[in-house]
Length: 239
Ligand SMILES: Nc1nc2c(ncn2[C@@H]2O[C@H](COP(=O)(O)OP(=O)(O)OP(=O)(O)O)[C@@H](O)[C@H]2O)c(=O)[nH]1
Ligand SMILES: [Mg+2]
Image (cartoon, rainbow, N blue to C red; front, side, top):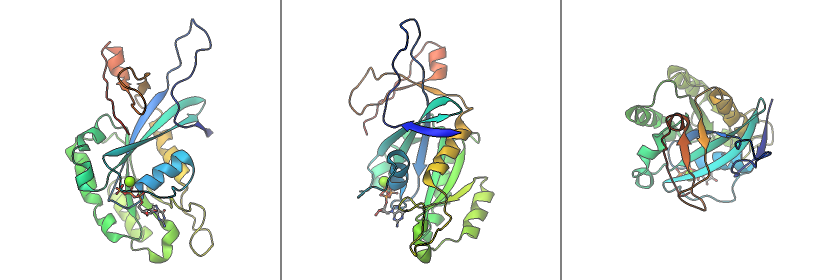
């Protein structure tokens, strides 16, 4: 049984001066797909629990985090909401894929072109040497607009099967109902990301450190294996 505890928080306080601070495992999940498919809205829905009032095209990357608890362990899900527009992403692409734990491919069910772009996004992953062990999932967004759908579930499922990915259809805007007032039986955004987190829980972790080389929005990460070797990796990004 998993539940969400909080979001946008660092670490925990010590309960005893003799104990080291508890470590929070961090899972880096990148969300990629064409501009306008709803990556920002999906990640915002998961982390803030609502649909954003308005969004603008993402430039570079936006980070969203949420601490969740799975089987008694608190883990931090760090979502990298990437830019879909080439001009806003080209200088960042190599950073998206560094030490990534899972990839979420998003298309818009009302936009066939965004579905046709998926092979190019998969190819980009391949070019950045993403291993087969990195879980990938496929998300068809905007299911609240079923009447305008251009990509059928059958076609999407065939594509997902061909690439060994689970398919989820959802709506960041209205995960509970469709535009004619009835239930659309779409997957809940939260359930989708929780599924990924469950899958990752048994994998090699990143541990959180307090950010020594920045402040404010700066996030500093070190790899567990680097710590084991006594060396430090430090990547600092501003959201
Ligand atoms: N009806 C509906 N509209 C959505 C949904 N998700 C996103 N939108 C709308 O789609 C538009 C684009 O959403 P974004 O989340 O900014 O798209 P993005 O994929 O982050 O785009 P880039 O940052 O340019 O890559 C916005 O006008 C959203 O309001 C959804 O589930 N249903
Ligand atoms: Mg965006």
